Image (cartoon, rainbow, N blue to C red; front, side, top):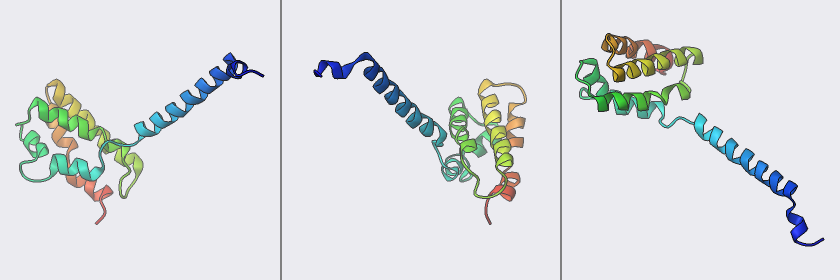
Length: 130
């Protein structure tokens, strides 16, 4: 058997298919991993009196602030809460993300929707350990 015969079209196709499966598996696992942890989101958006979250809640948010909210809140549903029901976590974090997206569009009532969704006690009482 010559070396040329070792690279038949079927072998090349099978090698290409195996490579595609490997790469898609890697990408799907990377897509499942959140960009930010819960702690990183809370520190970036809600820590301190001059936080982005407080600024936005007072109606003083900018387009850049709204974009940052969307970026960070997008990671929350992908995280697992330290305690509590995963379904409750998904619902609460999806409400935060949706509210941030509405802020970006400038729709009427967006601030009220955000302030309702950003109820810290409602989430912490269920999902944050003591």
